[in-house]
Length: 310
Picture 1: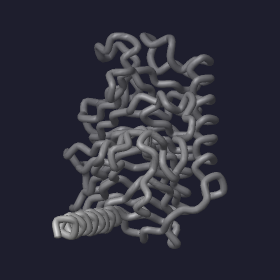
Picture 2: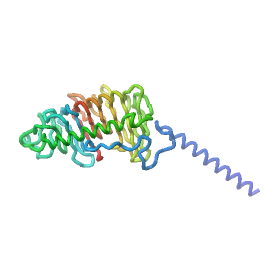
Picture 3: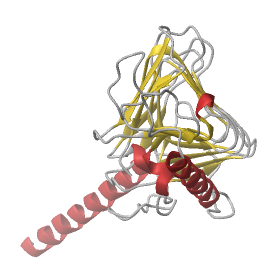
Picture 4: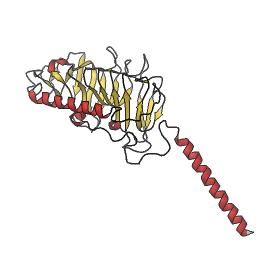
C-alpha cells in the first residue's frame, strides 16, 4: 500500500512539472519574432553580428556630400559613454550650418563655428570633418585635407555597413507588418512587403531577453517614418537591449518625429535624407545612436544625439 502511494505521488509531481513547462513555453511567444528556442545567452541571435562601422562609428551625424543643418539652440551631439564624437560631410565646410565643434575653445565669434546664429546653435563634442575651407580663421585644423580624408573614409565605411545590412547579405527577414508601433520584437532581421516601416500609434519595444549582445536589423526598400502629427513615438529597450546593436537600413529617406519629442534608438543608415523634427519645434528629439545619410543631408531641429561606443 505504501509503495502504491509513493508511485502515485511521483506521477503527480511529474505531471505538474510537465504542465508548468508548457505554460512557460506558451508565454515566450508573446514576443514577436521569438520561436521559443531562444538564442545563445551571449551570441547576437538570428540577425548575426553587428556590421563593422569603421570610421563611421565615431560619427553622430553624416550628411554624405550634402552636409548637415541644425536649427534651434538645444542641439547636442556627444558620446553616450563620454567619448568625443564627430559629424561631417565629404562636401565643403560651408555645407555644415548651425554647429560648432570643441576642438578649440568655443568663444564666439572665435572657435570652430559653422554658420551659427543666436537662434541656431549645435554643440558637437568632437571634430567636424569636412572638405576645405576652414570654417573660421580661429579653426585652422578643420576644413583641411586631413579632415576631408576622415570624412571620405567614414563615407566608405558607412556604405559598406549599408551593404552588409542588405537583404542580399542578410536574407530571411521576418515581416511584422508595416507599422511597428505597439509591437515587442525579439532580436532578428525584419522587413515588410510594403518596403517602408512606420512607428505610429504606440511605441516599439525591443526585448533582448537578457542577451546584451542581441542584434536587430530593419531593412527598408524605401522610407522610415517615426511618429505622426502631434504624436511623437519612441523605441523602448528591454531585457538588456543596447543601442549599439540596433540598425535601420533605409532605402530612401528617414523622418524622425516631425512633431518634435520622442526617443529613437539605433544607427540609421539612409540612402537619402534623414530629418529630425521640424523648424519651430522647441521640444527636444533624441536619438540614441547615429544618423548616417549616404547621398543627402541630415537635418535636425533641437536634437540630442547620444552616440554609443562602437
